[in-house]
Amino acid sequence: MEGLIAAVVAGLLWRAYGLRPGAVAVWLAPLPLLLVAPRVAWPVAVGAAALAWLIGQSGMWTYYTRDIQIPRPVVAAMFLAGAAGAAATVGLARAHLVAGHAVLGAFAAPVAWAAMEFLIARWSPHGAWSSLAYSQADHPLALQVAAVTGVWGVTAQLLLPASAVAALVASREWAAVVPAVVLLVVLATHAYWRTRRHTPGRTLRVGLVAVDGPDLPVPLVEAEGADLVRRYVEGARGLVERRADVVVLPEAVWTIDGDDRLKPFAGLGAPVVVGAIRVDQNGSVNAAVIHADGPPVEYHKQHLLPGLESAHRPGRDLVLLPGEPTVGVAICKDLDFPALARAYRRAGAAALLVPAWDFARDGWLHSRMAVLRGVEAGLAVARVARRGRATVSDATGRVLAETDTMAGAVLDAELPLDAAPTPYARWGDWFGWACVAATVALMVAA
Image 1 (cartoon, rainbow, N blue to C red):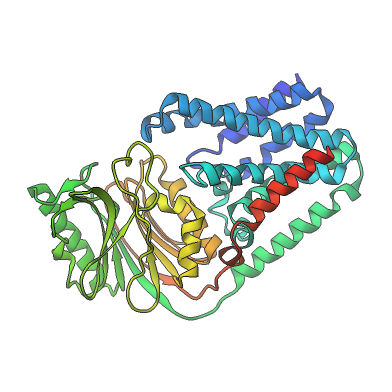
Image 2 (image 1 turned 45 degrees about the vertical axis):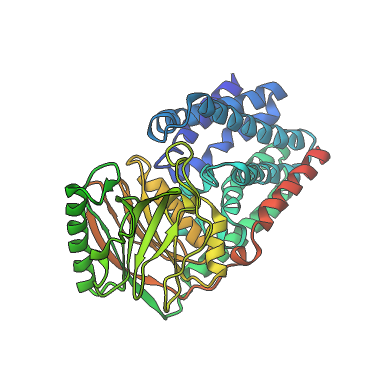
């Protein structure tokens, strides 16, 4: 009965981790499972963890199967794999708590869960999509560890308080949680310092425009496509008149072919980043066509959504806008993958401009993934999505401006550009690999 109650309570809390997560609920969700784990038999403890994860994920079924059209057997396998991961994490923590290894027990769940998320991100076609860390994306203080560790440090931080409390209850020794408390104090101090630092300097005024239009890319040669061009040009011109240094449009608004480069966007007085599907004799690419001084330049989306974008060729190259400050371009799902943002930071980019296309329900969550990529790499991010949100965020994860784009929107804001490159941008996935090694060591020690 204890195991069942823990599973239901944790599952309902984890269910708050959906497309608009409850930040506090995700901190609390592991606690009932970790508290009950040393009190019940091993099969009950791991079974409760698996059941809790399945309850928590149940609200995502229709999103995966209907909105982004992942086959049902694949979604079922994803859910079962997640349940197995949750069960293994709780089982590892339980082994140490039962054996009296209170300090190791306090760290087992955070380290193992972070390792699991890291390995999933390495192998999954959806990158770091599944991390619990995005639940904290409206709370910049909770995100700053990502500048050192990547997103997986945020996940470990999320589980550490509940894990430390469980170790304290199991051991009844305050000394068991001293290392965890010290680490949490260090993380809080670093977060406060990083978010409060202020270095006056360069800014980029960015304009984002989305026009209410069809749910599919429109051929530019059709009347509807020409009308969309006119409406977007009007929006872009208005932003330039408001002194925007660059204007960004959403992803895949038109399909284009031949040598047509969306010429009406040239000559507006500022660079314009236009999302379009380019079709040629070799197939198609999801492109961001950049109109600045000189001939247009194209960035091609590198990470394509399986199924819905399988017909397109993936791109391979980074694209930086000419001139200073140095600004890079990515498209939507590209920012589900931390490595691309790191590559842009190492190439000298201080900001990313991101045309995107969401699925209405996931507008908040997907925009916050881009925000967290900025924290990891030390980048400001301006992102505008069809059927989602337009967001402007700085390198500490503060959302400076935001609006819904479901009925169209125009937004402009100053993008601060003086953040230093982060340790994560320089060192890469050191923390993820360290968590994998530590998990193996914890398994041996158990």
